[in-house]
Image (tube, rainbow, N blue to C red):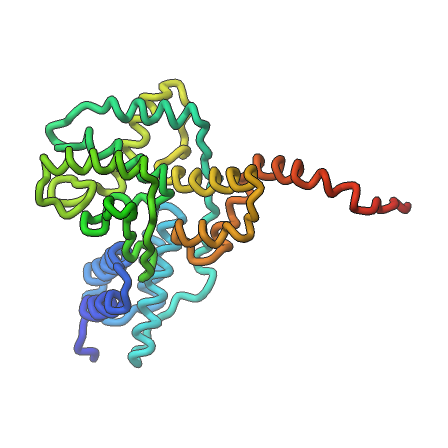
Length: 316
């Protein structure tokens, strides 16, 4: 009989991932939920089995993205155990398919203006100290730099260097970090923000504080929807837009601007990829599917070349 419990193995695995440089917060919580499930129903179980794992996956009633994430974490955990000589069940490929993402939302200039006007009118709330200062600054950073929401809300003060015009994004997606240089206009705004919020939270750890911690993801999504509806009361809001669409908009608007300026997009794409923290240029190229302005610009750029290309005769 195995002398170690499932929880001990899971704890060892999480420590192992963090030692490799991964933050592993969300995956760690996902794995611990699986452990809690097995402890409640199969307290003697030490290693993942096919029957129990499939029973757990069947109990997940969240989105397809949650199921896909859970399968990925459990598969990785079992492979770790296999390398340690344990006969753990490894979930086979294609057990859960990668969910198809909805098309991103791209903002019109008047939408951006109206949203931030509504956001700047936020009233203080005794239960959310400083939120009228935090949210206008946090959403502006998302919009101006194309950050992931988590990157902004968990940003620590020690990684913000306004005197040198940059912020450091630490281990956002995987163990990689990156440095983002920001505009002088944004620096000036954040300096004023920092002075105001510093009076309320003089010893804060996080640049956008919620008490001694940071705002959770639900607070970002909920407040985005609240102030979008304030700006556009008659807007038929379903799943879009979201706060994350500021990231999509950042990529989209830069591609359009570079195309209209006649810059070589092949040369510029690697810079955009690094700035946004994409793992490969394929992730950045994804946005070409949603840039009609780029294709109209491309056609106008290509018109002078049409006379050079020979006409291909049509044959029946």
